[in-house]
Image (tube, rainbow, N blue to C red; front, top):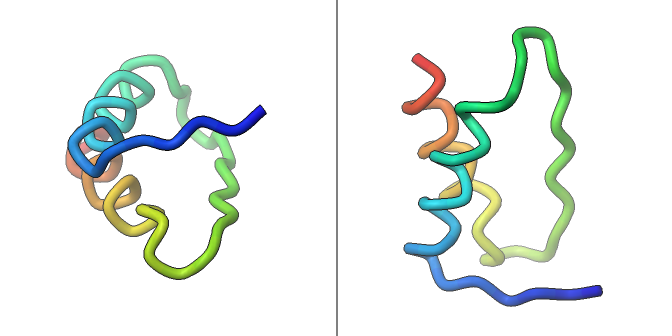
Length: 49
């Protein structure tokens, strides 16, 4: 299954997941260049801090 998200949707997903992920959890982001991995990571890290 594949779902395409806009960058704002990626931000929202990162914010929501940050509320559920426990400490020491490993998340692997796999994708081509320009698919939003860094966008997700920046928002996720900001929400986790």
